[in-house]
Amino acid sequence: MAKVAYFTVGSNKLEEAKAFYDALLGSIGMTPVHEHASGGRLYRGKGTGLFGVLGPYDGAPACIGNGTMGGFSFDTAEEVAAFHAKAIELGAADEGGPGERMPGAYFAYFRDLDGNKLCGYKFG
Image (cartoon, rainbow, N blue to C red):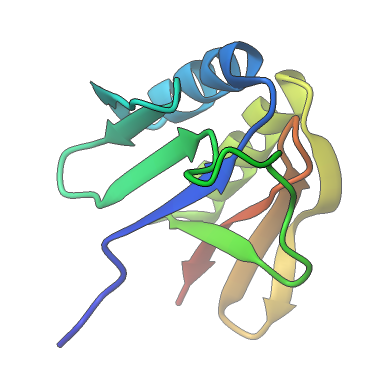
């Protein structure tokens, strides 16, 4: 069965974005694994796919995708809440605090420093 292997977000403030993601992703055991030619960085954790914060390949300014969102899967609702809280602590904007969105589906949403929308979730 196929599964999502990686996703990236763009940034116009790469040094700030890397500091944000170093702290946020470090809180869930993901660490930098590659410094990207764009000035960005790729991260990975044990048993996870890749996440990247990059400068756009075409050299144009990064912009957020309308309807684009990346998600991080967790084992517990408490982990989802902690991930969301860490993002907010680091300057992210709340886009929907931790809570059950439908039976057995717990989600929390935020936007990073560039406005990219991300979420933490737990099913079951």
